[in-house]
Amino acid sequence: MDTEYKTVDSSKITISELMLPSHTNFSGKIHGGYILSLMDQIAFACGSKFSGNYCVTASVDTVNFLKPIEVGELVTMKASVNYVGNSSMVVGIRVEAENIQTGVIKHCNSSYFTMVAKDKAGMNVAVPGLILTTLKEVSRFQNALRQIALKKEKEYQKTIASFGSIETILKANNYKVKVDFEK
Image 1: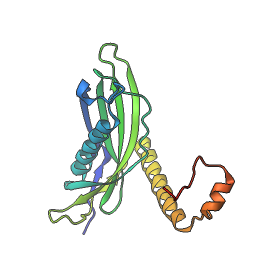
Image 2: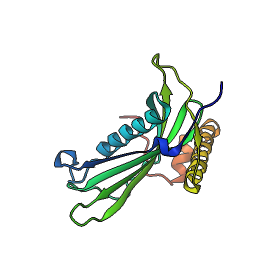
Image 3: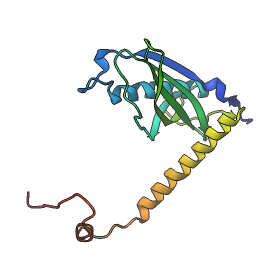
């Protein structure tokens, strides 16, 4: 069977939404959980558009909230497939907020969602190959390879890491922790 290939451009999705008071947290800024929900939606749309199948979120990497988002700002999210595996895709998402009165745009977040394509029976299904057409797309692909390698190294380190006994940790006095099993 020949592998089908699609361009990164064929995966691109952009959504915009005005931030309302109902989206705020207790400090009056837009709630991070609400932004994460929107990011998950655009990652689903991007992965599904590219693969032609229903997709589920397998993991979310590196969510750093760089700048707060205010009520009344227009949030725009841009997503594209940066990497494909057999049934998985790494979807890069950029979040920007625009003050619609001044036109000032700020970068608020970039994140990477790993989406897995599923068939109607819920089984993993192959995704198309990826055609890279710009140096930026090649750079994003290479970044995804680095992220995958770091994830694998982290999982490996979990299997071999040893931090010693709890007594050793407490004696080192490097951590802000107490152990009290009496309570």
